[in-house]
Amino acid sequence: MIMKWLKRSVMVAVGVSLVGGLLFGKDVVSYVRSSAKSVRTVVKDSVPIEFELRRARDLLEEIIPEMHVNVRLIAQEEVEVAALKVDIAKSEESMKEEKLRIAKLRDALAEPKVQYCFAGREYPRSYVKEDLANRFERFKESELVFASKKRLMVSRQNSLQAAMQVLEQTRSRKRMLQDKIESLASQHRLVKAASVGSHIQVDNSKLAQTEKLINQIKKRLDVAERILAHESQFVQAIPVDAVVEEDLLTQVDDYFQARDQQTRLASTATQTQQSEQLLEN
Image (cartoon, rainbow, N blue to C red):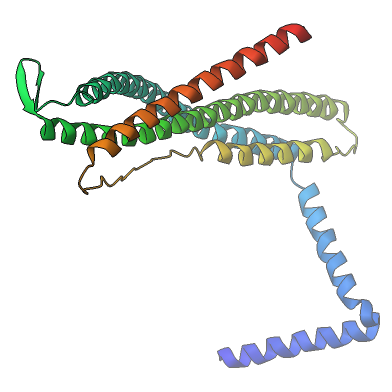
């Protein structure tokens, strides 16, 4: 039975195609497309204006829950950024203290002694040397982690600021669309009142424009939902080779001297730039 109906359908389709080809020739496809487009236009124009206005309002109402979700995400990100700032401040203070301890151990080893006294206790030279080496490696690792945390904070702050701007733009766009919908509703009521007893037809172009704007605002909301949180992990291996005392002292001196020189150069460059700006002003 099914095969019988299928054969009939195929035969009807072939027949229609043949008749269309005979009547319209190569333009039969164009005629079919134009007919379908005309049908869609007629159906769309037959939809009542009240229904389209209600549909536009419903679309705006659907945006509200999405906005609430994004507000919550922004609040959570603000808390994370604040916690990251506190963590960075603690890390910076800890690194300053550890740098002083390393300098103290380095100065002690510069004096050739068999034992050294720290906090009322005696330590052999080999123990002090090993402790300095371990502290120095951990300090360099902590600097890498500290720099990564600062980059992460800048990235999250930029993402947070961008999300807040998108949310504010969404709110502003929503208010604008609400005003536009109400304006269209008022215009429709006036036209409807003026067309009582006549056959006036209302142009739907402005309403279609409003629908297009609503679709655009929904796409913009999708952007606000994609706030990326970056997690950084650092795995640094500590060399376990034997520590040469002379090399260790040289490494510590070279490292901090280079860092101090970089700090002085950066400070000098900043002062020079400020002086140039003052001269320009």
